[in-house]
Amino acid sequence: MPLPLPSLPSLRSFESSARLESFSKAANELNLSQAAISQQIRHLEDRVGGALFLREARRVTLTELGKLYLGLTADALRTMESAFETARALARPNALVLKTTPTFAAFWLLSRLPRFQQLWPSASLTVTAVEPSGQMDSLGDLTITTGQEQWGSFLIQKLFDINLVAVASPAVAQRTDLGRFLAGQTDAIIHTIRRLDDWGLWCAGAGVPPFTLDRGTILINSVLSYAAAEKGMGIVIAEEAMIAEQLARNELVKVHSARVSTGRGYYLLEPQDRTRRPIVDAFVQWIQQELAETKL
Image 1 (cartoon, one colour):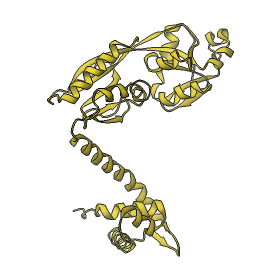
Image 2 (image 1 turned 90 degrees about the horizontal axis):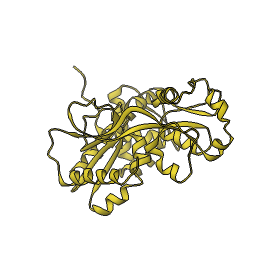
Image 3 (image 1 turned 45 degrees about the horizontal axis):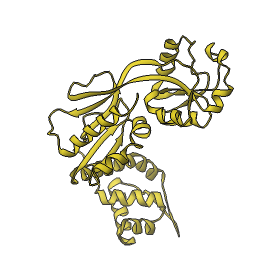
Image 4 (image 1 turned 60 degrees about the vertical axis):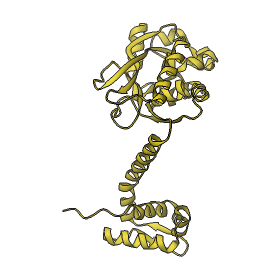
């Protein structure tokens, strides 16, 4: 039978002491006495069965066992803290928890949210960014994500289709040789790991030879890729709706006229078994109004 887990206060004392390399600084951070921190660390070491810290005159450092234990517990602590803050957010009056992709949050939602806050100044809005493949059935009132209507347990509203365009900064677009680009010979391109099929989809639709991963720069997600394109690092395949404001401000420009449909879209998902609260109803209506006023 597994032994009872160490107490949460002892784990917090351990994490803080390890990060700050000081029992006294950890005590200040956690609003405890240094003696209490030392006692919790000793208790944790007794439970683990070995020393977690090397005690020096003015600092403490992790032992090899301490480094291993910190690596195993730090993510769990962050997960518990995140779950606690999410639960607190749900309990607030006029609380709304929205899960969406990092790209939608950064490039579509954030610039528009002040308008919703003007309509609902008392709203307590929590936005959590998850990748499209992330878990969709955990805490949250609404989810906005991409796909092809594959969510059976939600009420689904399609917001808009995803069309791909090839864009770059004005400087990069100006110096790009269109002939070399159309022949698939341009090196100044940006790949997005979480959207590796974008170049293939766009090239097929535009009649351009595909660009392979041995050419250009590779970045983890669209947020970084679009930012890199703005800074002049190369050409990126972008979701047109996400970079509409950058196109309007001439921060990004199209390097080719092709606009290629992906067959995917952005969808609003809502749990089927949950009574819609007034704040949720207001947010859904606001999203619909914003879309009606936006040219996509």
